[in-house]
Image (tube, rainbow over the protein chains, first blue to last red):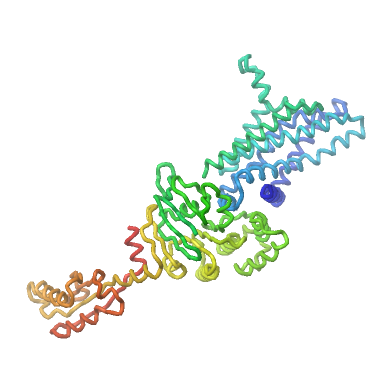
Length: 234
Length: 327
């Protein structure tokens, strides 16, 4: 546990040492801000549904950019050897990096809390969907971070890691729009694997254990996959 | 302290390390020598638990690395080849992070860092970014990293490669200093370095151990196998066929000193002489360095009319042993 905190703290600090953090956060805020406010006044409703509805698609590209360096860079520089010869287990490393990336996503989301505050000045905001939306956003970013870390553990090339991560996250996001391609008998099963529907139901303010379980499962599978890749590599 | 049993590593079908058996005692400085691609780094990486061996086991203080690699890693400090550090961190932050991971108590970290920075000569660069450091400085930071928790075993992979002569001398000095109480295993392909710092030398080639001895033994083994060059003025140089006749005579003469020396006729080193190379390695009498074969050769030739043009001894170096074993 102590080692997880040590690794997470180091990786988290690393984000802010390099310019990556500031660039990614800025881009994220510009894109979400523009998409949100460009239509906000047209709908004339004081809610954040529009913001949360496009969050999965934006996350599908931003989160892999956040996680791509976590393993790839270490393997490329060779510091992976140093990390693995210190008394830390594979689990410590994978979970530590996951915690750091998820915390970073939280930092990225934090400035958007100003939106509901701003909206509350011009109209009555229903707190349920907003709170649900942020809980869902955290779960979603956790799931995508886990997938992104898995992608990063596969290769020493950060660009490849980003593309693999973004491809998986994007597929998870649009899966429920692709249902007409699959046979009817398995549509429900395939639909359950889509991240978007689970996220949208939480962001309506309905906290369902199935949705939470879904995100926790994705996190677990991603981290376990990372663990297996690390074990296989040596 | 460390027992390596039948250690084997395959990369796909390529065999990098082939059944190495080794026992390393406490307080030993062991030098791992070998040509490029001999399996030095792979062996060290398995010792540190970075690679899993394909077969075989490593026991450190009776703890198997296969069963409890974390326990073994706690006892070891490791400096990988060319010290790959996190280059976006400051030296101080990096060492602080390592200290945390190595489980050093929060309040004793600053004093430990101070100690290490003095030992490794880092005091002036603690505030610099790792990416700005030269290779030698990085190597020193790596050394501080390896010694962080005062490990009982230090494993250094080519600690002096790419350094300038001053830095090499410094690193060697540090190794010697800490080697008084610690077990150190380091790899190198510089022979003089192994000779100067190690108690024991293991030479590996193509994944196998080809020599494993104390530095003293290896050195004396090298010295005993000396070669003597002898040239004599040849009175009948211009006479037909005289050359062979004369050299046969000389061989007979030299053999009369002791029959089990090996004499090989060489091309003359200059005009008008005949030259020989004389090996005495098999001869017990002359394996002791105080008994010099040259004396006996001189005395023997003095009895005849031959005139010596050259009589010199070339001792076999560690280099030639290395060369022979890793051919």
